[in-house]
Structures are given as C-alpha cells and as structure tokens.
Image: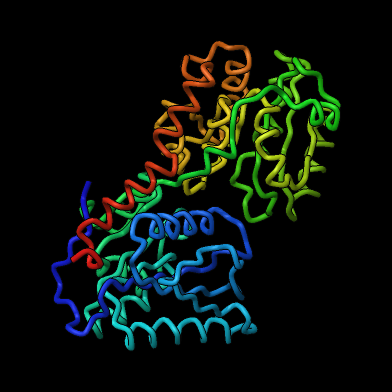
Length: 394
C-alpha cells in the first residue's frame, strides 16, 4: 500500500502534530458521508490519541456532548449561520485557521472544499488530501476542483470504482490514490431468525421469501434500483408466488412509487415500510431472504455490508461502488442495474438456492468474511498505514 509521503517544502513554523479536518457535517444528519467521517475521526482518536486535531464543520451547529471528547480536539461549527453566511463563515475559518495555525496537514472531507485547500497550499505549502466518495467526484467540470485534484498530496477514495473513474476522466496518476473502503459497526448486526413482531407487522409467514431494500426514497436517488425490483416482481412471483418485497425508507419519492405499484397491481406484494429506526434495522435485515439494491450510482453502499453481516445473500449493481462492497461478486451477486429480466432471474436463483456462489448460502462464513474485509479493525489498520509516513508523523 502506498503511504502519504511529502516531497514539498513544509512550513517552518508549522504547529507540531497538527491536523486540520474540513468536514461538511458529522452529527445532525446521518448519511453515508457523515458516518464515514465519524469513522475516520474515531480511527484518529484511537490510533493517534496525542494528536492535536482541529475540526471545521460547515453544516452542524454543535456536537453531542458524548461524541469525541478528547482534549486534543477542537471544533468550529458554521451551521448556526443562515443561508450564504454559513458558507462565508466556514470558508473564512478554513483560510484563517490554516494561515494562523499552519497545520502540517489538511484533510478535505469533501471535494467541494478542495479549491480552498489549493489556495492555502499555494500560499503556504501545506499539503492536503482529498476524500472522494461517488457522484460528488464523477464527471467533474469545475476547473478549480480539477486543479485541486492534481495538486493534492493524495486522493483517498472509498472505492476502486470511484478511483478508476477519476483516473480515466482526468488522466490522474494511479499513484496519487489510496483506497480506504467504508466500514461498519459489526456489533450492531448479527444473524438471527426472522423476528416474529415484524412477521406480524407486515402480515408475512415465516417461510415466505422476502426481498428487502433499505434506502432513502428520494426523487434525487432514483438510481437506487427499487423501481427495477418492483418491475421485476411479476416475473419473480411467476416462479415464487408468495414472494414479498419490503422497501424500507422515507422520502419525497413515495407517492410516485405507490402509483407504480398500483399500475402493476402489486399492492399485496409490496410493503413500503417507511423509516426504520436504528434499533429495528438489524431485525429487518434478518427478516429478508435476500437484500437487493441494484443501484447504478452508489459510491459504495454501507447497507450491503450490514446485510452481509446478518448473513444475507446480497444483490447489487455492476456499474458503481457496489462492485467494491461485494468484492467483485465474491460476497454476492452483481447484475446490470437496468436489466429488469436479469434482476428478476438472479433474485429467483438466489431464492431458489441455485445461484452459483456457495458462500452466499453460508451465513456465518459470509458474516466473518465481510467483517474481516470491512470491519472497523481493518478500517483502522488501513487508515494507520495511510498516515504512517504522512506529514503528521514526520
């Protein structure tokens, strides 16, 4: 694995062991990026407990009192400011604190902040690293973001898919990239029988084949693939008449989905479960016989890991970060996310026990494999390797 080596001159007055983290938000909204950045912060706290860290957070107003209480951490929040003032306050603090504190290293938690990192770098020589996720970094047109990618010390990608897209789209050197895949809390997800209370809630039988998707139902996230599963359900039911699809999540796309279900006369075969609280999420994974999300624009997809940790056969799309989450098909099934027939036939195979990957039918082995590959211990080790010869260790 490549490490972050600094060839450029370092500021003579740099504060020892100083790291600046520029994050969009961490606490008040729980999405994939926010969870990933919290995992990075936890990895720093556990692996580099004596490091002085300054966290600048654009959208949050404060932090929970029980989160990241190290005396070596300082937080600056811009979320209390209205509208454009929030952006101005955040940008001012990024520049002011970088110029006044002269950290050894800046970690940009989003590519939107990279142009400011480039500006600071040109003034001071402070090296910076950019984290890229998925659609945030695909097909970039902004010239300053592109310049910032070229000038970055390293680019950390959560998936090989996003890394490869950036290399191909902007002719970036592969040596500039490091992979730090998404992790998950394995202790929250375990293998167990189908929960009786959910069987009763949804009017299901214990031996009924259940397909599950967990995602936001946002009109901006139509690429998640739940439309294709609904369209595939008639084919699936032809082979497995009592198959049932549970789509868990909330958002502004629900009315359109309800209309599609009615058009296909699938009201008795699809349940829109709405928002699933954290304390019921594991139970929902254990309720299903297959977790399916044939997305085509997923940066990685932590839900795949959570389902795998519950020992569930898992299906994803073969055109996005699900390729990495499912280890190129080693941990699950990858299909063309636009091919409804392929989705239907693959789900039928999985439910009938004929899909040609024996690992997906070995729940304990599947769980152990995903923990070994993507658990927090591995995440922390990978992050430590990335930081080993970084500016903060020099």
